[in-house]
Image (cartoon, rainbow over all chains, first blue to last red; front, top):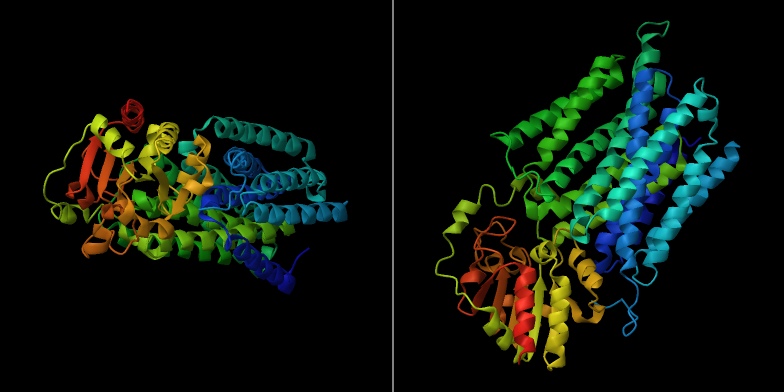
Length: 101
Length: 476
């Protein structure tokens, strides 16, 4: 299990990583990237699965069920819309470089 | 088995980071989402093997419930995500983001209810939630619960506003004061959860946090919505990271915090592009209190032009700069605009597209739509690159944009837009504005550009107007 200082290291390094990733992004990719990061926090699904998995009372099962339902919606929906948006960023035949703008 | 699951999570976390990295360049962006998707599938499958789930007394019921919930939630999201028009993408992202926040809040609810139940049955009789979970876990669980819940209800309001289902910008008088009080009371109940074992406290806390999310988001002006969605995206990431700590799940911590920090930076970039601080976005509410004051700032009449004349003007221009806004998206006019561009280019007119950083409902929203229509990247210019060029422009064609070309942002210090960088369309020889009607823009602020001497208004639906322009230009 992750505890104490080790967790703080993870928090810190993950924070820097996120900052670093987005600092060099062209404006044209802001919307897809926001959508992509929206998909990535869909990982909440695995936590929701555990929450429902350890549920013992009916109340806990109901809340856990809602958690998985919402988490799955976040993950799947986030993926589908991001994929659809990025699909349009295929390099065109004449201009095969999208770095412009 | 435990080790195997942790390795799967580690690989998933690496795939998320690499995927996001690739999404930051147009060339590799598509591969990026595929990698991140593979990470998600891997993490989800590994979780079915988790000992906490398999050792539960109700393992078979719970696994069936998990499968049903994934099928329902995932199925709905798959269907709605495939169906949604590109134009409506921002509110769809808001919706999915809200779902993630809700999931994080629900995870916290399960943990807190379990802990308060255990504490209530503890032999000492005075045990609290904090005693059961440990101080660090309890604090992060509660923080994740607040943030996740606000992100959940706030995102739903953002979705409703963008989807045109909710137009109110005020619920109560003195909204900001009430919000501040509500925030304090919610924080009080959050602290109370920590120090007691009362289930009622937890319920009241969640209700308050839900209402707080609604109250915070309702007064936010339409033009500020991109900032809010981005902020809620970052907040959901943070909540997911916190709940990851509660569950001891490294993949959730890493993915959540990466999104939290990336999202915070993106939010700041957006707010900066609009020359507003994030706090300002929450506490100002453009176009609600101030629209009346600035409405009398613009005088004069709008001059109309017919599509026929506008088409001729553009066909004989040396340079045309097209400024698209959300109106173009609503009218689905991007394909017609690209057709018009091709005709004008054939006639030797130099055509450029000028994109304001916050045009549309999100940064890059217009770029996505123009990419969909097939406009090559090298015709699309950012604000800094094109602004000096307006002086050499014969016709600036504004389609469905309003606030981003409003010169009062530069000249009128009483305007709520004052200080926001704008596209200097007004410097062009002629400005043609395609607009549905005479009303103000999404922010509700009057636009003096429409009354300027060199501006002509072409009233009508964006797509229809573009078709008429194509017709007029073709006939020459």
